[in-house]
Amino acid sequence: MLCGHPAGPVSQSAVRSQADSLSLPVTRGSTPVRKEARSTTVDVQIEEIALGDPRLKLFAELPWRLYRNDPCWTPPLRGDLLGSRVLGLSGLLTPNHPYHREADVTHFLAWRDGVTVGRISAAINRRFNEQHGCRIGSFGFFEVVEDYEVASALLDRARNWVKERGMTVLRGPGEYSNSTHERQGILVDGFEYPPTVELTHNPPYYGEFMERYGFSKAMDYHAYIIDIQTPIPEALKVLGERAKRRHNVTTRKANLKELRSEVRLVARLFNEAWAENWGFLPLTDGEADAVADTLRPVIDPGLMRFAYVDGEPAAVLGALPDPNYALRPRWKWYGDSDPVRVARLMWLRRHIPLIRLMFFGVPPRFRRMGIDGLLYAEVKDYAQRRGYRQCEASMLLEENYRIIASSEFMGGHRYKTWRIYDLPLD
Image: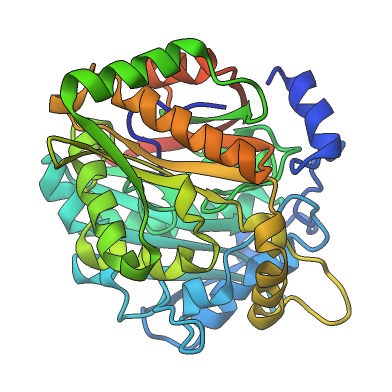
């Protein structure tokens, strides 16, 4: 998930100082994925797993072994990937997920001596290629032991699969691809901080493997962290009041009783605001519904606000308490099953100190009215009164200078960076 129009969120030392007492624990160097003995590709077997195959459970479970005891790693619920009737989740790795209506996908698992040592997916998102007039194939769900030969063998399979289908570029990683609303990117800076909801975490050698294979940077995304308890800038208050008077701006919080409709409105505004941005792919209603189902347990309606100009929807700011604060694995004897993690989330959800700013969209025709400052000031005031301590704004395109400048104006400092890679196939 991304922030659209201006958003915001401490030098590394400042983040470190705050994290010691707040919600951003700092490890002294992220625990690496467990290293396996080096081997040649002769010892590695790669098997292809189609969508709908029961072996996708092995595919989904692999990271739980690779990241064992990493204090930063925080996976999605298994139901987010494999589906859950109890939790009402369709599951991205299942055929009934709306993603698969307009994409072709496959999956590969790497084995050595009867043990899974890596995974990767390959995908062609037809809607993305039609939108951008390109032939990009994607790789995603990339996880591997610290063995370049295994990584290379997996990347070979993904590259060959998309090339055989006429693609000219291999891009990734994402989940399946790099459309705007997917978990995506390889973390290249900020390994000592755990990810917030919908974001990724990995050991440093992933980026090294990409460059060794021949990939080059396509785009970086940044995360900024803001101290919520600092005073709201007077300039924002002035701009907000001026917007109300001059443009007949009204605002309201989200209505949880109509959550699906509200999230569809978020998607509509977000799609308009982000239409010209790099890598953008509009959210469909089906995908918006899936987002609503996933985020329903933690939404705080006061953190999601809409603005209207003369009664017409004109902007949205959507933040939410970071569920990863409660969902991070505990690695205890009672396990980290979905029911255990969800129960912990329900217990802690009103005590989460960190929020993530996920949607901040102002369509072009409503910009430069001061609406963005008005929404930010209202949400920050609410967050202060509710006791939230920090806000992360992410993922911010490195070339979106306006949003970067706005983040810094709000007192934010960059503390994480993710990278998307391209590999020409011609």
